[in-house]
Image (cartoon, rainbow, N blue to C red):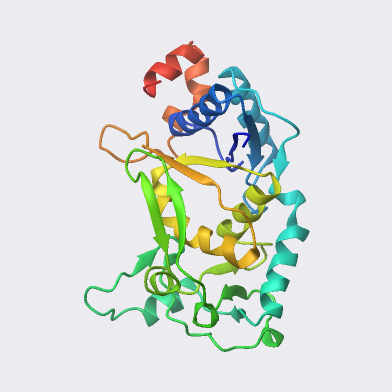
Length: 279
């Protein structure tokens, strides 16, 4: 099997040291295996994506010495694929429209049972308020959710090679109902959710290894289940450690002080960046 992986930044701000670590790790692993490394632009949220940030991302990656195979994959060019997948799930009676706002969901979950998780990889665990609404009632501004109460599947598994979670992990529908709730497949005025889009993107690019930060590990069971529902293959996963600031907080887009472009302007070299992130 040819090693195929990707780096998938969102063009909503500058790349920082955490992004550099993830991109370099994926690139190095692919090249060491004689495989392929792809650049995917996660621009599904067109309200926030900016072409100037994409241009900056590509410039920073090239400066770091990274090369990618084939053309850049942009999610905004694959909206039809995402909609077709949702339509297939809807035809099986597995979806429903949801008009709940974040405030509605928080209010409905204001008195959680002791010991029951309140948040999962899709945000606050949805209490099922709109479950049972037919798709014929969907209105502009509604989200589309997967009805886990209508889903059934055998126990599924995925392989993880990252340092914190190495081993084989099991995914069950019952577990997802408890820790995720009915996940969003498409958000209002967006073609698809993060979870659905990356499952379809990884399948479309024949990704064999998903290499990303360990903050996304908890999202993997849901994505594994979506792979099963949509008949898509399951890659191997490697969730690496995160780059954190002096207070132990993981870096985010707002951490412009650690932006790659700023280090470049201050005279740093790509080798300096590698040393900073422990490579």
